Length: 471
Image: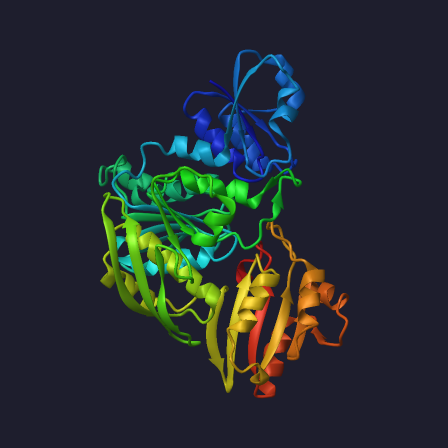
């Protein structure tokens, strides 16, 4: 089998080496010219040849092309370099499913994607499944929980599909140390320290999930230089055995999808999982949940209701909670366990959380994918905004979703609150504002201002994905 792996920036090195270890002939195309010397040496060790697409003219027969879903080239763009080849195309997600074909059959596996709420959902699921020692890949790192204690396998890791395998490999090395294997103290084939897996992905999923959770598509942003959309990429969720999906997203983008096991959730009352009533609170929101005709992994169909209390101060947080509940019910997780896990969820440092500093209540909404809709929802979750400063801003980064400054400024022009813009994002918005608002270059100064003036603070901050301390 001849394989061409495209894109060494987003996990291609891991994929190429994994295929080469199976004695395949593997070529690599570094489309963004970002290949590091250490990775180049790694490819050389496994006889992976780095090529330009012109090299395809030297090949004949069959060629499997493995590409990221956001590749700014079409299949025809690639085929024209040698029209005589017999091409097969697989996404990075699809090849990861192939590489992991015989992995994890004995544990529950969850894959999470969506435009907003992915990381929050992962860590709610972690609380519910904590007794199973979950193995996790998220935007906060590759993690393994043992008896409730977090072990960081790798912090600076992206949520590209190749890093699902990287996370599994890292966990394997911990469970099977070379020194102990050599001494005959542990089994190098079967030993693992986790009983479930939860994997977050940005643009679709691999399809290894027993349940795939699609949180939402609040913005169907373009990818691949406007050749594809987020909804097209995230349609890979339907490769999972069961799909938990927001009802509005299913109806808008995937109404023609043919899948036998789909469970929906919504704040409205026409989904499989919804709310009977709700009492919002900045600390613990009370939600009466109703579920009907949920299809489970063991082919049961279940219905019922229960009440939870959890950290979900806004509607968008409750939507995430419903997605998590739908996922858990699909896995036949008892409702008592769901209730307990969600009660233990207190938000995520570096995402949505609440804290008290002196006399000020500080609510942080920090995310690399902040957009106008997220800003609006965050503001709407506060009842008495007269007591708050609303700070909006952040950093520009490398995520697919870039903030629309004009749209945000138009929305902020309609508000009559104490608004402070901050950071490079805030500076860009400020230039488009029609009314006068405060600006502070450093967001830390906004905390000081709020505390000094005995004001509460809602910080809505777009973090640069590469800056770990602001994730």
